[in-house]
Image (cartoon, rainbow, N blue to C red):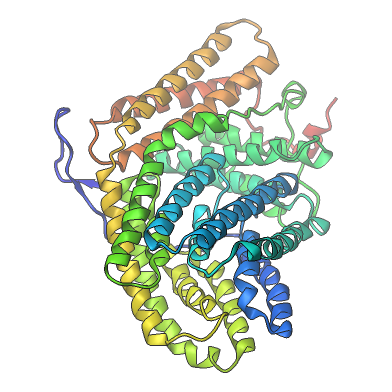
Length: 556
């Protein structure tokens, strides 16, 4: 984000320019894009084909709702994935139940939009607070809001929920099946990502172009690797070996001039597949104290800062739905879902998502126009088209959100035809209008609901980073600090610096707030990373290029 004035005064409200350059830039695909893509196809296909064979494709919206749960938690280790998916399925069932009950009790479109907006806000806050990961609240809101406008009676609800619950169990099994082949795959990938990020920073020498961004990315990847390892349960032999590699990545970040970037990348490459984990040696004292630090705040502590986001979501979704109704559009839930999909960590990112959503949906409508003759050849063709678009969405969405929307849009339009073919021209017009309305109204709500707490969170993150640095510095001043306490202090400082950078970046994209202490943030980061380097040296963790790591690890 750029500022319209080079140096606004503290008392002024900074005027912001909304970015356009780079909003539609296509990036690299996710390393594991094929996992959610294949999983969602495997989760959708059997239930849909069974209903097709029974001549009840009109019930596919309920099985589809649960099948989309297969998109979640693919980056988590399997023990953590199993728990997360249970909560995702239960959350989907809860939102679906509320929507179906509301649909059966009232035909008031205004009341249904209000219920949908409140559900969307709750889903957004809970997904962000629990850090469930992509696709976040959007799929849950899509399911619940569409169900609000499906004809329903109270007597039908148990059967529809049973269909969704049974498909949810199938989706859970689909997502857990890879554990039979590669039980440590997710944590191996997380460790490899940390090693690659550390190697990228090491290549800058700590002072080259882009070193600050590379360092922040490196520490974020290391923290993600620790969280993955800490969620695996018992410390198996594989986990211990991966922990040592993560520590090596941390050490490279602390002392980039002394790190061997090629070795780090070689270790990362060796983690592909199911081969043995490289043995990165550590001094025995350090190896015995690989405790890790789970510095993530509890759920309730994360809910408070999300209050402005909840208000934005509820207000934006409600107003978008009401605006759609005022225009006479028959599917206000499309405008509601568009608004719900916009809200990101700050206003600037929300604007970028709004542009991506509109562009992707408009192009997606054109794709729908091209494929609808094929889809109308029969219900089997309709199902196959939906499967193809669900795969394509995951193939493209990690490159840029608008690319994924090109497939999501025709899939959403085709799903409406499970109960019977619709007029393509009417569907396309309503989709475009609802998209534009939802994006405009949703963004206006984001601007109107200010988040002045962003600056306060930066101050708290600064204070936390200073406390963590002072704790580590005090231990370094002791003649013989306890190894476990020193390790915990080092990890705590690393996590505090990651939180500081993430908080500062999020706050920098907010509007209508006082100036942020950018200089203090930079100074805190510099002093914190110097302390991390000193702590790593005190622990004897700096790499020794002259020794074979397997021999070093085997020392008594």
